[in-house]
Image (tube, rainbow, N blue to C red; front, top):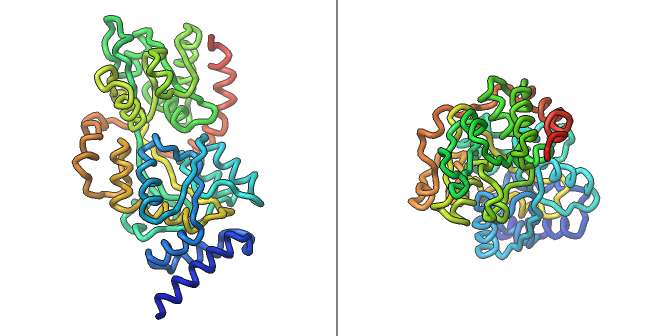
Length: 362
């Protein structure tokens, strides 16, 4: 009887949220902290829907998570794809009428989100198995998976040139390089950091990379459109600088034999993306359930089957194991040493890029 009453209470609470009876979702976070999994599911089903930002189907296999939640619990889902910065802007600008419940942002943006007080805490039942460096102490954000800078190389465009395995070889080979939108996308500005590391810089010194990309731009070899399946398939790009999981996913979506994916030996940043829940979410319980499932063994395998590297040490399915690059490619990856410095650099990078690189793009 006690269990039944708890379930009924959860459904009533979630209905109150849906009707706008509570000013924000903070009470949902308090309630969820002591709920069982079944109680969280019941509350989420009472809401019946979840809106995500920056978590599209093709990115790290999010489609598997959303399909599982819909098929198993009847909770519908819609995603709006956007950059990390755009996600936070949407959280901030829509406080009175939130259209996003949960998002996925680059680690460099997490402190901004915390400082602006945009996030709802939720630790999940897997909290103790998540490394300390991959979570905010109150559960405001949790890194669900890691990713590493990779070269995605169109072998049809090599024309006798060798497959570049380092930034040095990339520059010397005269390849058309796509870095993406450095002004907004975490994938792109971490790619610039990887180049800086290869050229002797670090998270506090991006000048070597800015000079590198300026040379490419002056030679007409730099593309700043976001690398997607459509433009890669057309053969417009020789080498795309993307996260490893995106490179592998795009490769298999277009032609496994046509593209080669390598981790650059002289500079590859290992980073990750953090799960964030909107403090003003209209569907807070559904968002918390999504986080709970993504950090579960099942959810971590969903991400691994999308070529990402799970944050938790879980047993991987044979399918997931087959989607990973060889471990030896990651031996020399660079992990950001000072996030405070890196956050300051990211804040300044847009202006530096505009002045020192974008001005030369042909």
